[in-house]
Figure (cartoon, rainbow, N blue to C red):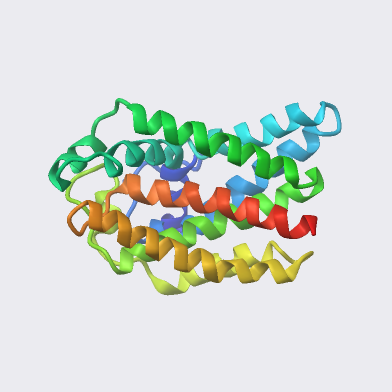
Length: 241
């Protein structure tokens, strides 16, 4: 239970009364954070669609998703863009990841991912937002965490303690299963979990190759954002057929 509270305390803004730094158990609980953050954000957008024009409801759903996560994964995505696409040695890339400022690559990444995210939301009917957000957010987080089994974590950083040991497989698998169950209205969409896992591992390997064999917390954030947007877009495209 403490692991779950630690995950919510560090990876969301929900007041859970826990301030300790996250450990490996918190990583295993990350899919549950995604399910709740996504589900609540989707629900907020869906309810807003009853009283607001659709574009504003989309903005509510998108904004709630970012705010409820504390923007921690989006910030990691921006930092990773700056570091991983820079034509510098791996040591310098690790230094860039620690720089709180955002540069050209981060702005370029933001300019690409936000429109894609908004369009993916717009292609889904508002009634689907709660379960679709929960499924995509939970799956993206669970798939990204699997990299902790394969690639060592870069030294330092606020979340370093969470990577001192491998996350437990059972709660992580349970989290991925719980995310997949969000597709109960369209159970065939659950097959997207497998390509999401494969994509997460490939992205983790690419990030590690750019960082001399290690991963930083920002890399996990980047993988989560990429997968969440890709899953939303894929689900929207499949449902539109």
